[in-house]
Length: 167
Image 1 (cartoon, rainbow, N blue to C red):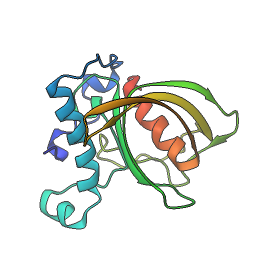
Image 2 (cartoon, rainbow, N blue to C red):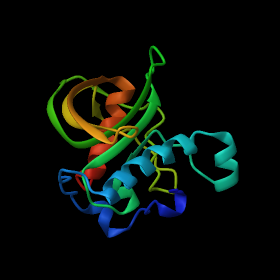
Image 3 (cartoon, rainbow, N blue to C red):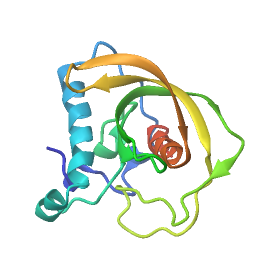
Image 4 (spheres, rainbow, N blue to C red):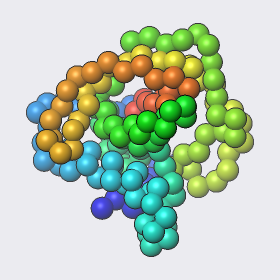
C-alpha cells in the first residue's frame, strides 16, 4: 500500500525530470504500481484511512510523485457538474488539442508533493482533448481511448501531466 511516505516531496530531483513512455506489454511491477496509485487516491479520500495513516486528500497522482519516472497517472474524483465519478488510470497520455479559453482553481491548486501553502493561480486550458491507454485494474488490460475534459477535470489532468513533463 502506498502512503504519504511514498510521495516524494518538493526539491526531489525526479520531480523535475521528464517521465519516459510506458512499454507494452505491462510488466508485473508496473501493473502493481498502477493499482497502488489508484488505491492511494481512494484511501486519501476515506476519513478512516486519513486518520489511521495520515493521508492528505488527493484527486490525482502521477507516477513521478512516487519516484517512478514513467508516463502514468491516476485520477479519482467526481465531475464538478453532474457528480459522475472519474476513476481512471491513464498511461502514455498525448494531448491532441485544447481550448484557448483558460480557467483556474479559485483557491489555487494543491499538490501532494508540496507540504506548504503556495499562493497564486495557475492558468490552465478550460477544455483539453487527449488520447491515452486506460488501464483496467480488474482485468489488467489497456484500451486506447480519446478523452475530452472540461473545467475541474481538465485542471486535474493538466496538473498531473505537468508532473509527467517534469514541471
